[in-house]
Image (cartoon, rainbow, N blue to C red):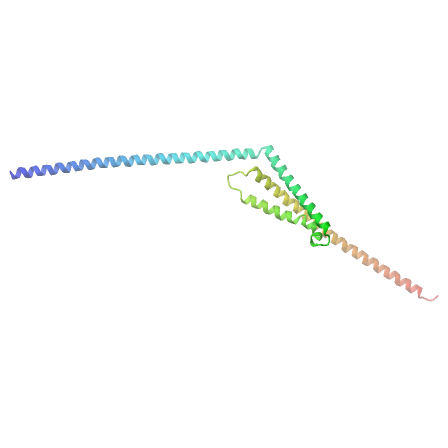
Length: 209
C-alpha cells in the first residue's frame, strides 16, 4: 500500500514537472514572438525614418536647385545688379553732396580741409564692412533673398566707389603738392634772378661817370 502511495506521489510530481515545463515552453514561445514583433516594429520604424529623411533631403536638394535656377535667370540678375548699382551710386552722390556742402560752409575747419578724403574713405570702410558681414552671415545650402543680394551688390559697389574717390583725392593731393614744390622752386629761381639784376643795376648806377 505504501508503495502504491509513493508511486502515485511520484507520478503526480512528474506530471507537475511536465506541466511546469510545458508552461515554461509556452511562456518562452510567447516571449520569442513578442521579441520578434518588437524587432519587426523597430525595423519598420527605422525604415520609415530613413525613408522620411531621404525624402526630406531630396526635397531640400530639389528646392535648392530650383532656387539656384531662379536666382540665375536674366531678369533676376539684371534686377540685382541694376538695383544694387543704383543704390550704391545714389547713396555715394548724396553723401558726397552733403560733405561738399559742409566743406564750403566751413572751409577752414578740419571737415573743410579734408572734404576730399571724406568723400572716399568712409564709403570704402563702411561698404567693405557691410559686404563682409553679409557674406559671413549667409547659411550653407540656403539661397539668399533678393533683398540680401541687392544689399550685397550695393555694399560692394559702394566700397569700390569710395576706394576710387579716395585714390583720386590722394593722387590730386600728391600732384598739387608736387606742383607747389615746382612752383616754389620756380619762384625762388625768379627771385634770385631779380636780385642779381638789381645788384647789377646798382653797380652800374654807382660806377664812375
